[in-house]
Image (cartoon, rainbow, N blue to C red; front, side, top):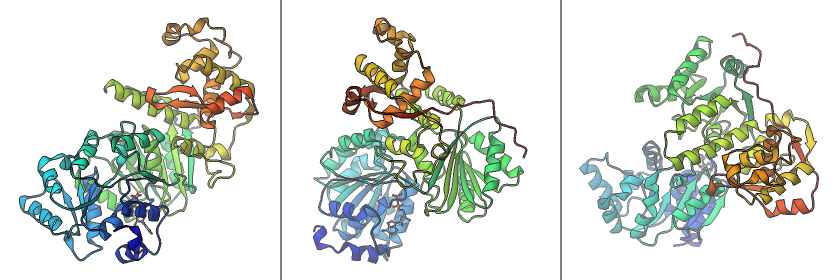
Length: 528
Ligand code: ADP
């Protein structure tokens, strides 16, 4: 059966009660029904689940849905069961099931009743399960949270690497991979590892025009600043993210004693307390949840009005995902992050115990967060560029919704400096990351530069008229403008693009904004 034979609009109404498809859903569903490998990149809340649920419900056989989170699988199974009178329509297969339950699951699959079978990747690797699945009719395989397959994603899970091998044993099945967080590098990794470079890719825009992005310097007054912010948003729902459980407890306490209804949420609390705090937030018995990243997965509260990052996150993927929980109803959503370089150093120190490759990736991802925090350009443009999307902050939707655009720094002409920078990247022949390029410009030596004898080149120190901070800011802006590109495979080696080579030949105006000064000690004391 292919998409032409099924009235998917009718099925949408019948199963889900929706009158219309959202975004790219219809095209995705048609692609999958036509047995094509399909790759879906949609931000959280974009409606990814329906992209495989509907094709599963209307086809013969059982669709296997691989998902890393047991709690989310349970939620989804309950939701699907709610659409039908048959409990057996959806099942989870995992190691916590009793023998009787497993027998029932197998019976329902064999009889053709089960349309969706949710499995964790580790259950799918079990030989006994694979042997069983070989004997039944499978419609397709959906790989949810597909970025888990990539070391460059924010949640790498080695078990995901075995999936392709197992799926092949089950036959020539169409695969649909879905993710909400895919930088170009992660996308490439997913397609390669699932061996589906032929997949039709559907990518929705990651722009969330109703979210306002702001970064503030984190000073010793950060707590009073947060309190003041929340009081300005009285009665509204918000989430505050902290990196440690201890911080979560401390901030929740400070808020409570300052008359703000807030509860903590982290993995160190017992399950009952966590569930209670989550419910209190959903039912609006409290305004604020102070949480570690443990909070938020699968939380679908539409009217979260602010997301505050007390500590900077480890990657822009996490930042995007966490801030994405604000304003899901399309209304106001203020995303405020506090930034201090000390926090960056803390995170780096924390990573230093990990294997070298993991460390390198961690540092590279963190550098992007630093660049985001320090930039003076449109934050939305910066974020979207990171996700491989071009955005024009003058004409694009939500273009004026960030602190940098609202309070722009003076722009200065940097045409000559851009040429100089591009020439250095070209003439050092793609050996260097940002740091060494800037060092070459300002004439500073380090071991890497010495090893290449760059310090005896005529161009060494040709940019001393400007300081390190200036060149670093310019380099970031030139990267976003597409004259340079960062090679992720080599952990951030900067290369010149064709557009950059062309700029050297035919230079034109380049207005750069100077980066903000971050002053750790400053800021007035706020009385609470
Ligand atoms: P994602 O997995 O991309 O984060 P979900 O699948 O959880 O998104 O869907 C987000 C929300 O959108 C859910 O509440 C879902 O019921 C709703 N939704 C999905 N498709 C449609 C549609 N066609 N019409 C209306 N609402 C939809």
